[in-house]
Image 1: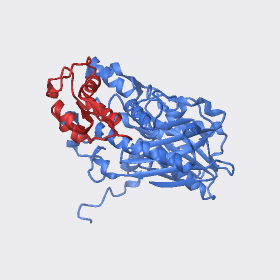
Image 2: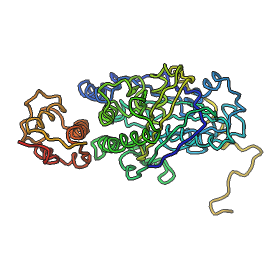
Image 3: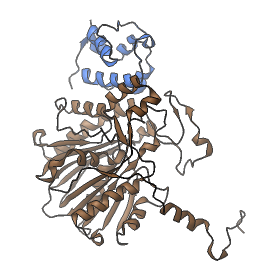
Image 4: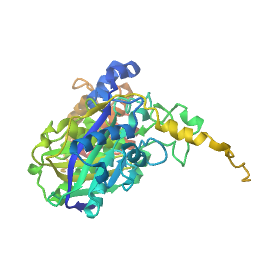
Length: 384
Length: 83
């Protein structure tokens, strides 16, 4: 595993946002049956989650960032870096971070880009943002991490429907000579790509009409090529083999001992998954150190670690805490961070009205199809 | 992690537990389809986790999915189940 140690960078605040549209296990029970859903929710630890019909990744991340920047009293012109981590970008192109720069009125001097990672994305984003600031020339970074994976689940898939939720987040990082070091450990095993993926809709396999067809898959679930496939058994074997090892490794690299650790903030894969990881870390059952924030949110992919912090760690507003963060999953990709956080701005999770936001898409489309000045529509197929 | 052992009765009780069945339900020679609860993807992940907890082993999902009977499940962890 690769280790990265970052000095002189502080986290000033974290804000998370979810759509105000809730879905409940009772709604799922209409599809899957009450008895079946009771088994499933016992395992997942989720009876309610937030799934947007209208809000996008950019909307949820922007709502978080606007609140964060305002509450910190930062001048938007002082922001040097804007990183957006997502696997559900608003558009195939351009990068969602570029659109958010414009929507938020951030200066054009900002370095903005997307990172395409999911479950492991928050800790990766933190590592990239902190490493950029550690160079010394750039002073302030906003890390956005969010996904709208609720719409990626097949309605017939009881492994994903009751689990996947939507969320966005914003984290403010700043150069600070007195900040405690942050230690990261990351790794990758792309052999896991076959177990957790969405096959259609990329440039390798652009969406064709037949990709919308629901067909019966090997796991007995009706799914289309545009839905996310997850092999839960393989995710579990990956997690129990990789997560305890990376957590122990990053704790050792940070020079911490277990009693010094105030909390473990892991990607909220499912309650079952987190309990198994807790067992392997030899934490007592139901240890309050192992933060659980699945109820009310579900698994929100790249947003799950910040959502868990905003939902569960109010005490961070006061004294610094030693936290171990760990993202793991789709890729396979993983990254852990040993970080001392606090005091910082950490409000409860924001609820954003899930209403249609007319404007950007329509403007882009309008700009493309309208032909001011009667310009020739297009070149002919043979290039003349 | 030290590799433990369990008795055959303890192993079968673990399967009962995974399927939320009363202790003593699973006798040990059944086809998984005959059990009074569904052996499905949820049971498979629970089995992988239970085996990991008991013996420190990590079974592959494919191997567990390929099993059709309780003896086959037991065979995956054979050295750890003693009479």
